[in-house]
Length: 286
Image (cartoon, rainbow, N blue to C red; front, side, top):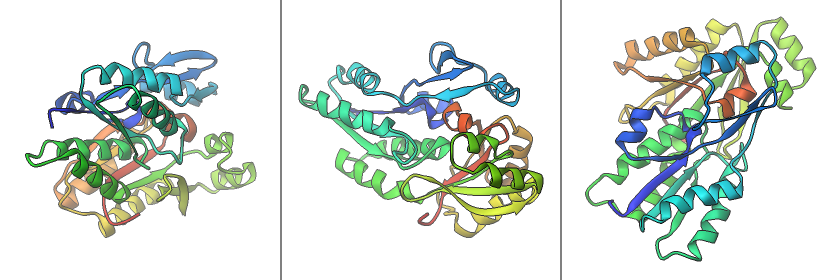
């Protein structure tokens, strides 16, 4: 599909080499650490430093891509004369998708080539896996834009997101967990197991005693609903690479497939905190 550009946001967590291989264009995002503004394109803070700052009590804030930023980003690429398929971060977790929908409407009034926006209902490397699958599909010889959009809408709710966090205090700050529940859970070493549901929102599915058991549970869930015809598996971590390697080893030994391990983006990690571990793959309906 030479007449198409696939775009997304940098918070898809795809490695740079994957983005370059499939010519996926990414929109940068801004975030704040102790009141100082950073940008994922111009002055990105290293992941180890970002999560170390969080552990030391830094005040971290994230921002969605606003309408003006979305418009400017898409306008830069629509000048190519090609159509744009923008695959956006879940509307259940951010207003970013709505910003791109607005920008697309404005640009489509002025241009013969068009912008199409799909709400991925995915997050982190789950969103990245969605983008990767669509980019691969676009390379098939008989693919059309209509077929590609249909495929994207069909596959997105089959992408599984399994999350756990190490300390609930960061979810308390975001208003997702009460202080009382978090205090008790941290005291008893209860680790929540979460997923992204069909509305693209993060929900708690289990509460498990201990980090070791929750990692094993993540693997067990995967063995029950993984679709082996899709070999792309991603593991994201917020400065807990050792745990990511443990989970990866379980998957490699069982399936013979080595997952791609990537740092968790700050847009999610800034709310879930250091020690967040997540697993993404194609399975049954969520």
